[in-house]
Length: 233
Image 1 (cartoon, helix red, strand yellow):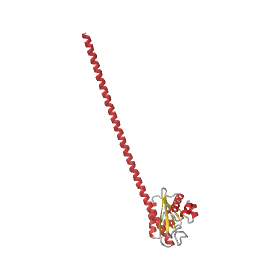
Image 2 (spheres, helix red, strand yellow):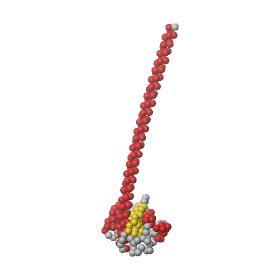
Image 3 (cartoon, rainbow, N blue to C red):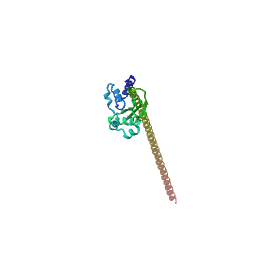
Image 4 (cartoon, one colour):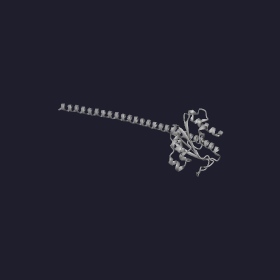
């Protein structure tokens, strides 16, 4: 494996060292991707197992690839790459899975797909995707190129997923802050309404009491005046 691929493997592993695990499902590369990753010391902390499923039957039996998809799309397709990655991830209970399915050469085994075509599948617990590229070279060069492409694909999608997760977290925090502000404003408004209602109620009570006292004084004056008139008579 060339130095660029080894460097890409090290870059991917640095991301996994935060407590994540990876699993691999390969076809045409025959375990080369798994070997490249496990060449790095400490692999047992983030790498548990992998699969080399060369035949249709192995893909169906080991990774639960849909036979209809294989018949309709062929093994070298985005759909099969995704199903291989998803099947491996579920069986290994890993955080992320990579799959490789392509045509390393020297022949294309009677298909209409070109030698050097590869699909790389990547799956996490919440999303899955596949990417393709065309590489020109002999069988060994193609296999090594497929592995390098798979590593770069994994790094790119991993970084995008982490950026999205961070943005989602920030958006959720912002939404919670806005909700907390609204609740605080609502509470302030309720308290203000309650204070205003209490003040208004106190003014009405005082007004009624003053009116009552005025009414009693008038009655008392009339009684006194009536008594005086009666006395004159």
